[in-house]
Amino acid sequence: SANIEQDVIVSRPIVIGHRGASGEAPENTRASFKLAAEQGSHMVELDIHMSEDGKLIVCHDDTLDRTTDISGAIRSLHSDVIRGADAGSWFSPAFAGEQVPFLEEVYDLLPKHVEINVEVKDSGGALFDEVLLNYLRGDNRMDRTVVSSFDHKLLHRLKQAEPELRIGLLYAADLIHHASYAALLETEVWSLHPEHSLIGADDAMDALAAGLRIYPFTANHPADWDPLISIGVTGIITDYPARLKEHLERS
Ligand code: G3P
Ligand code: CA
Image 1: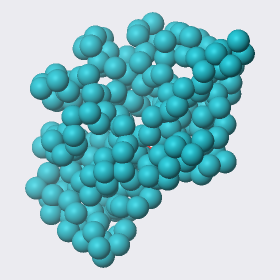
Image 2 (image 1 turned 90 degrees about the vertical axis):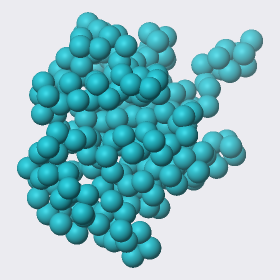
Image 3 (image 1 turned 180 degrees about the vertical axis):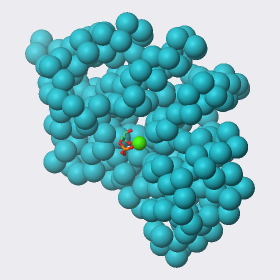
């Protein structure tokens, strides 16, 4: 019947905490990831850069200027300096003393059932690839991770180096056909991460039929969630995981 067909096509999306629960805690800090997990996020999204001494640093911008009390480009700072920065006070005095995390700290902090969407913001090329893949290969991390980026060439390179890696294509462009674009990459793509207003019902259906997951970003309001829910996306990336969870439970 029509009802059965609809049940198959439309399943409830998972909740993905953007930079943790960044609407309610300072983005990309341990406090933010902890809150996202407590609020029932199935996955968290975070951004990574590499420090001058080759450590994977969780931060959105290239520099520490906006989200900490010090300034400077992450790639030219030693991790000891980065660790001395206060990444919480800019958001609220209640979070004073939060540090800029290392990637491994976020993995250690989150319960094992919480998946992690690692967005590569700034790659240092071959060294970066090696450090990231070496880390992800350890301790059953690969199967709780999707590595996403707007740089699809970089994702292709990582996937060639590590075929087990799940890669997610981030894009804010209005593609002619989303699933066909993914196929052009000529390597297995795990998920599509379109800007949330760019994917419609037909593209979503074709992508799901092609075995792709769909994780649109960053949707923070019911008016943006509802169309995504109705086209059956796999997950929604939001700054407000608790609000989204409550909304999904009501809808
Ligand atoms: O991963 C989705 C989203 O985070 C991409 O944009 O600028 O928030 O990193 P941005
Ligand atoms: Ca991001």
